[in-house]
Amino acid sequence: KAGVTQTPRYLIKTRGQQVTLSCSPISGHRSVSWYQQTPGQGLQFLFEYFSETQRNKGNFPGRFSGRQFSNSRSEMNVSTLELGDSALYLCASSREEGQGKETQYFGPGTRLLVL
Amino acid sequence: GENVEQHPSTLSVQEGDSAVIKCTYSDSASNYFPWYKQELGKRPQLIIDIRSNVGEKKDQRIAVTLNKTAKHFSLHITETQPEDSAVYFCAARRSGYSTLTFGKGTMLLVSP
Image 1 (tube, each protein chain N blue to C red):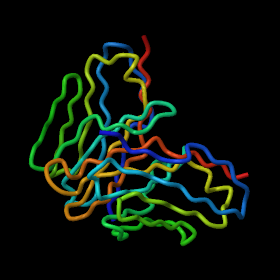
Image 2: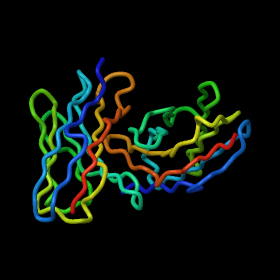
Image 3: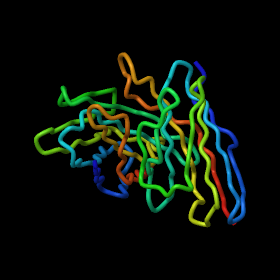
Image 4: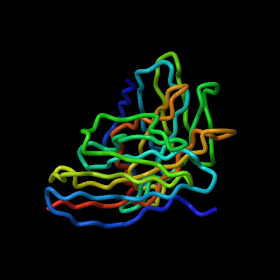
């Protein structure tokens, strides 16, 4: 099975712009979670989607949003970018049913730099 | 919500020594505890996980122990090798929820 994939791998944006990141989960996985990883804060949960619905949301401002499509692919969007949004954005997928349902598998991440 | 504390933040050992990383969690309803290894520039990779119905799980040189009463769990790596050098993250997941809460990570350095 192919692993979790994310595009693009690298992005450079300027303050005030917006950005869209994409995540394709492992085939058969219905849940996609997004995390922001920074050196100081570690892995912080952004939101989780399951069957096209946002099930959980972390403590991030409304500038961060996401969605999931019927094929389980997910996108996250950040509007009005700030310097502090520079980070590695990771998505992870899980089956959420059956044995080992909780196991989350991570994609390679998108490294976003905001100038 | 859940809070996961991880210690130490850095750990240096000599090749062949054992390494222990400890985590505590706050939510007694948490029942799934994975450990991830992240090498520099790479994605986090699951190395071992444990569910609350067992107290210990081993996989070759890696083991995890869970103490539900004290709400802490630990990662044990024996006979460490330089390729074990990485950042290790613990996490906890509450029953009925799909969210993982991560510790801040431990940078393990194994010197030859």
